[in-house]
Length: 423
Image (tube, rainbow, N blue to C red):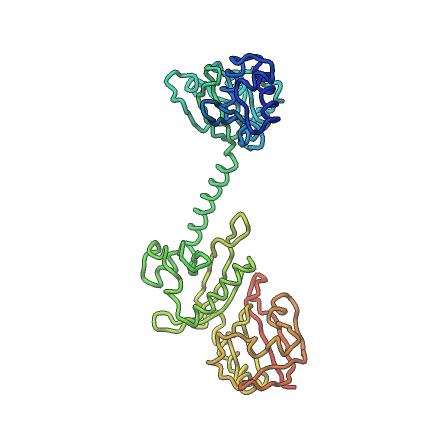
């Protein structure tokens, strides 16, 4: 077998020059070698996948196989692959194996792989298991080894093989799974922490998919509906919203998924035959690609003037006394409030406009393509802009428009306030 590389390379060369294929006799004559020698090595090449064969009558035609040489691909793998003889002396390895063993490839040939792994922390008990005659032909286990003075968890697989010359050997596959282990432990840790904190909060905490399917609700959310928290899993949030609030919630979720940013909104919803108001914040949970995989929601019931006594009532009365049109919207432009001044100026009653798009009134088409809501959300405050609005019946009106973002806390923009004065 010492001259195997020489003979195989000679046979490969003549077959490459004759891609249609050759018989053993033709190869023998072309290389001036005996038929027995050619037959021995052509069979070895066939078994290894280097050549294929087809029959033409009684003759067998050998030709180079249209296959990728797997051994050459091993160097492109991140896992370490080491081939040894039956005495565990290294015969071949890929680049990743040399990197893992922190030794140059030529210096590893002939060395005992178990000795090298023992130097890296392989325990005596594991070495005995590997050497045991009762060990199965394919053996796998997780072990801790030292690499660059750091302990790493690796997945070690050992396979017994038979070489082409009939002798035994082994293939070691070493995969570093330490980062995966730490990531899984961190995920478990934060999962437990989130659940513990959410269970202690009075606010309604929930997690949904972008399609509004619940993957978690805290006891505060479940208790309102008189159900067990586990029973929500797999349910759609749309089953717990009225049509008006569902429209706003879907817009909010769409914003979070599209922008990958938190979103805050205030909306009303019929719940238990009672109209209630909610201050809701949504936070994206991205995957490794940055796509939003889940959404964490924190919903606070602000009905009953808990946050300001009678101030909301007074503010509402003052707004209705103004001649100017005062409109509040979500960051996506959905109308949340609409005072009497807006009703008089546009001709639309508030019940007809709540939940619809403010851009149907302040249309970009009539204002040089400008989306005044989006501009405000992006940080541009608009003061007394000469604009055109569309009133009921398609009538156009000249007006001055001012806008400002509404941010309740944390710098998160939860809405836009629009003031319109007639020209």
